[in-house]
Structures are given as C-alpha cells and as structure tokens.
Amino acid sequence: MTAEPPVPSATAGEPAPRRRRDATETRQLLLDAARQRFARDGYAATTVRDIADDAGVNVALISRYFSSKEGLFEACLRAAGDELHRTAGQTPAERVPEAIARHIADLGTAGLSSQLTLLLRSSGDAGADEIRRGVLSRASEQLAAARGWRPGEPGSEEILLRAQMALAAGIGVAVLRSSSIQLEPLSAATEQDLVGPLRELVDALLPPH
Amino acid sequence: MTAEPPVPSATAGEPAPRRRRDATETRQLLLDAARQRFARDGYAATTVRDIADDAGVNVALISRYFSSKEGLFEACLRAAGDELHRTAGQTPAERVPEAIARHIADLGTAGLSSQLTLLLRSSGDAGADEIRRGVLSRASEQLAAARGWRPGEPGSEEILLRAQMALAAGIGVAVLRSSSIQLEPLSAATEQDLVGPLRELVDALLPPH
DNA sequence: ACTAGATGTAAACGTTTGCTGACTTACCAG
DNA sequence: CTGGTAAGTCAGCAAACGTTTACATCTAGT
Image (tube, rainbow over all chains, first blue to last red; front, side, top):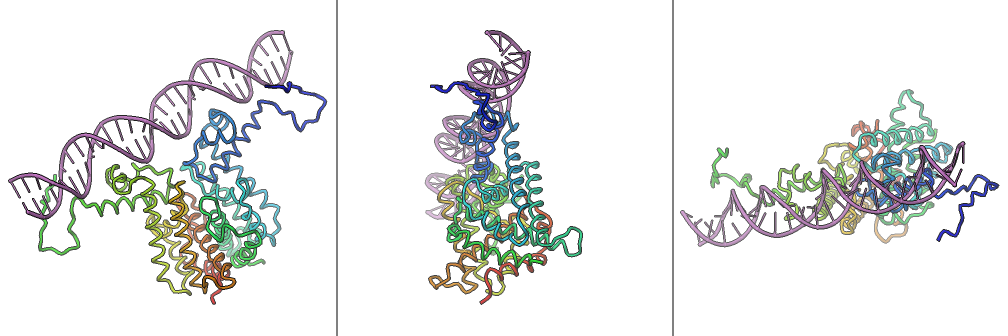
C-alpha cells in the first residue's frame, strides 16, 4: 500500500518535511478537534474517544501530550484566549463593533464565534476556571482600553463594567446563534444584519470618546 | 425516633397536611434540586445521584416521576420557561430594563438569574432543544411586543432580531456573573450598578416607541 | 546498518454512570 | 382492624468513562 517511498529529498525546502510521525502535528490535530467538540458539546459531554476519533489519532496520546482530559481542555482555553487577544489587538478603536459583528457572524465550527462559546464551557476544574477568568478579563480590558479606559482613573471602574457587559452581549449572541440553540431570526442573521444593532449597542454602552 | 404520632388532627386548617409520603412534594423537591444543579454544573456533569441527594430523596424516584434524567431536564426547562413567562407578562413596557436588571442582579441559586443560565444548558436531546427554543422565542417575542413589535408588520423582523440581541445580552451578563466564572467587576456589581448601563443598552436596541 | 529514544497502538483496568426489578413501608378507604 | 395500593428503598446490572500498561513501529544520529 505504501507506494510512496520515505523520500526525504534533502534538496527541497523546509515547508513540507511531512514526517509520518510528528508529535507537534498530532498535538495540533488533537487541539483542533478538542476545541470544536468542547465548544459544541461542552466539557462533560465530550469524551476523549470522540476527540481522538475526530483527530484520527489514538486515545492514549491525549494523556501523553496533555496529561489528562482537563489538561487538554486548559490548552484549548489558552489557545482560544491567544486567538482572541491577537485579533483584538489589531482592531482600531472605532472599528470595534464591526469586528465583533464579523467574528460573531461566522458560524463555522472553527471560527472565533465558536471560541467565544468555548469560553463559557466549564470543566469544574479550578485551574481551567482561572484561565477562563484571565482570558475574559484581558479581553474586556482590551475592549475598554479601545474606548478610552485607563486603569486607576476616576470612574474607570464603570467603563470596565460596561465593556464587560458589551462582551457579555457578544458572547450571548454567539451562544444563541450556535448550533445547539439556533434561535431565529437571530441565527439566520448575516453580518450586515448584525453590524447595525451591534454598533448601536456598543456605542450606547461605551460612547466613542 | 418518631416521637411525633401520625396525628392527622382533623380540626386544623389545610395548609399543613404534612404527609410523610407526598408524591407532589417529592416531585417538587427533585425539580428544585435539579434546576440548581443543571444551572450550575450543566446537564452532563450532573448525576442523578447528586440530584437525589440534594433533594433528600431516593434515586429511583427520578425514573418514577420523570421517566429519565432527560425527562427531568425537560421538566426543568419547562418550569424555568413558565417562570420567565410569568414575570415577563407582568412587566410594563417602560420598566423592561429595570426588570431585567433586577432579575439579573440576584445571584441566588434559585433566582431568575439562575434560570437564565439554565436555558443555555444543553442535554443533546432533541426534545429538550425544542423546548428551549420555544421558551427563548416566546421570551424574545414578549420583549419585542413590549417595545411595539407587531408580527407581520413591515420591518418587524428587525425589531424581533434586536429583542433577541437584548435577551442575549441579559443572558450573557447572567452567565458571566455566575458562580463558575465570576468575572469582576461585573460579578460584584449591584442592581443599581447594572440598571443604568442596561437601560442604555435596551433603549439603544429597542427605542421606546 | 544499527541502535536508542521518540511516537503510536491495542487492550484492559477500575470507577462511575443511568436505569431497573424485586422488595418494604406508609397511607387510607371499608 | 385490614387489605390494597401508592410511595419509597435497596442492590445490582450493563454500558461508558478516563486512564494506564505493555508492546510495536518509526525516526534520526552515528
């Protein structure tokens, strides 16, 4: 069956060494599969065998690479947090509502909308809760900072509170649109349908300074 | 140990027949315990033994009164929906933000805030998903109607969409305040802290007509 | 080519899960 | 008091769970 020889072909470039056994790639396959499952079905309803099958990988490798199911879940939270932080960092202050709308609009199983619902999933593990709190805190602080928040200033606490409410609204919309609920017409709304109301919502909570 | 005799005491009023075996009361005990557990820990992470212990009742009675764990969960969703419908029905149109703020503010394990997070819990069962969709649809239609929505009118679809976004915001805030996340300062905010921003949020989405 | 370590596999482990059947106890009409 | 039935108990089953162990196979350096 293996018609293809090992063929390292040393002359080729780096981009595709394509080893048949690559720990890094396997780790990534598990992470991607786990993020989708955890986001869609929740922590407890997802079995390690589900994840391994989705990734096309042996179950025992979850324990090897992530210590445990909880370890894998924490890695998922960290990955989602990094992704959120990265995309939030490159969003200019006045484009915040559009960015939120765009990320909420995509209903793909790997999109940012899916990462938002993942952040609500709980494993009952204290470590995971800590990570989630950190991710959400950082995200809300980024959002608040984009609208003029400076920590320590008088009245800054309320701005942060309002940013967290805006974040909550975004997460709520993402969840109500998600596959397990699909509330209509919200779930069928396009990015254009969402951006208007979302802009009014964000501007009402956090007036552009 | 039973120092107290049966003592039906026929002369007393109705309010406390207090039978030692009362199917209706047992059903209610199970429902209350289940609603708290399901709302706090989610469906899959909650075991029927947990619920029975909380209710101080034998495990087998869950199967007797609710057929199965899923049947109990569906009964919880229906109960939460009824409660939501009832309190929403007696809220005048202009008091909507205050009502939302008040219900989100109470962090008790039995309060309406807890019912909102329950509505996001999924069991993977199609019947439960159907109930949840119905409850959320009815709630958003009530909210939309309070702000001038009339089904079928031109442009009414967008009003309903905006009502669902407001509902999503409320649910999102409730979840981010809930025990498993506790995002600060949102989680520590009082009803007075919430009502202002919440009013601006709702009024921005659904201008009072 | 050879070998040591990295990577992947298969099977089983002990526990927990939802649920059931046979049984006991309390209630109330007669 | 007594019998019939509603209400509650108890022990256990079969399946599914996360994890571990012992083994097989690949990769890379020499």
